[in-house]
Length: 234
Image (cartoon, rainbow, N blue to C red; front, side, top):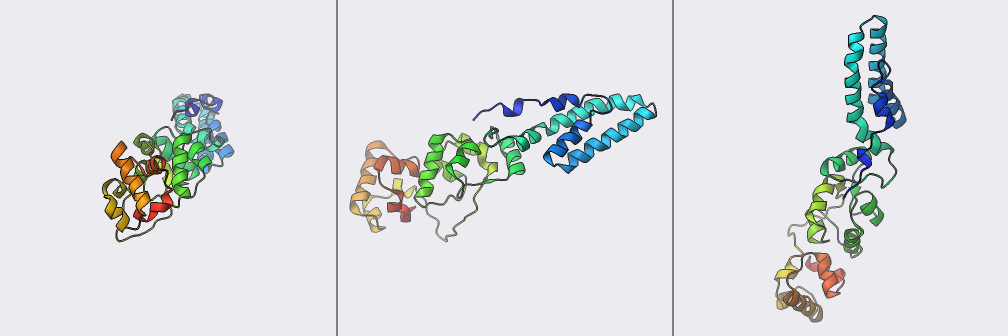
């Protein structure tokens, strides 16, 4: 994940360095983004500095310049996210992901489209395809660790996007089960649990020949068996 969208500095940030009226740029971006606290802050500082200029308190004007610039820089990223078109700013770290979530809301993983996975969460298409495959088979994600265990999404991506993801549909069970039983159960137990002998044999043979499955989507890929076939086991 990488993009340089948040590295740019809009012109209005530099305008904040202007004496007396520099704070109006903060009010301006507050107006543009409908952010009342920025609007009120910018107008308030400008009025104080205008009064200071009329009373010959020039020291206050010069003291305010670095403060105005610091405020402008502190709200820059929030402004850029607010005005950016879809897909222009992706979460490159947890802090950015949290900021995006605060401004635009979280992504419901169980309801979102593949386009959301790519253009909001910033996941590569290969991992987005894996997630879509799992969802198409009727599986519901319940927590972030399942993205790695079920859809083979690397932990480094999960760590970044976790603040931006919501799991809004939960299934409660007194006896939670785990897809890892496909790595552990012998042929006989898979059959006892309702899997037909042919499919159970394919799962066990592939596991024995090429090692344990790393994720649920890998079970699907390596065996060619649809997840619906063994969904009751996971």
